Amino acid sequence: MSVAKNGRVSIVIPTFNRAGMLRRAIDSALAQTIPCEVVVCDHGSSDGTPAVAQSYGDRVTYVRRPRDHGVHFAWLDGIMAASGEFIHINFDDDSIAPTFIERCLELMADDVAFAFTKALVVQEGSGKVTDCLFGGMGDSGVHPVGRFMAFQIKSLVSPGAMLLRKADILRALFMGRLPFARHEYRGVGPDWLMPALASLDRPKFAFVDEPLAVFSAHEGSITTDALGDKKKKKALRDAYQAARFYYVMERLNRNILVRLLWICYFLLYQNIGRVRYGVGRFLRDRAGWR
Image (tube, rainbow, N blue to C red; front, side):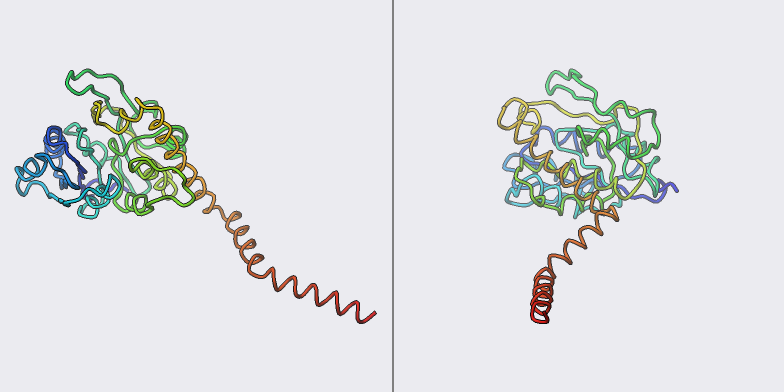
């Protein structure tokens, strides 16, 4: 069943010291062909960011914290402030076409985990298009979620090109530091987990075969910065690998046979002392009886 008619959408823009780019992100959010709530979450900016956000008046919900608590918590803070059932995370250096939300929302349904579009990578300053991401998913429409995960397990579809349910985003963000993870890098991990965990609950995903998201390539971007430094690139890769490992463990945990094995192991571990005592007593009794 389609949820397009009743689904309320919030566009959340986490930001930090990018006053020069923020206006473009806000303008693209306000220019959507269907009404959307726009939330700007600013953790500790020391430039003109507050003035930019406040210049929009009540058209934008502005959440400001005096201290920067990191990327992860800025996302979480902004999404907690949003009232929509569906959320698009629009990074402060990116933008979306006016029909982005409309085209994604019209494909959402109860059995659809999320929707996304292709994205253009544009060089900041020159405006040159250097890449088009997230293609090869087929025609616009709804597809089995396994097709998406076959791509996601080897790569990443950024939430900057996605529409997700608020509940699914919060589940990934509240994870915090992943269990058993040994690697972290600037909030990386939850962005990969958002659609991956959602795919465990719904059998389909929606794809719009149009480049309706625009990612800015510049020196200050997390990805561009990491790719130019071997140590940072490795940290980025390791953090995503930890997210993939957690997803695999979560998927296995939903398998009934695996759950039964865990239960058996737990019961055996809890009762191994009693078993040893019982076996020892039985052997002693047998020896005494003889």
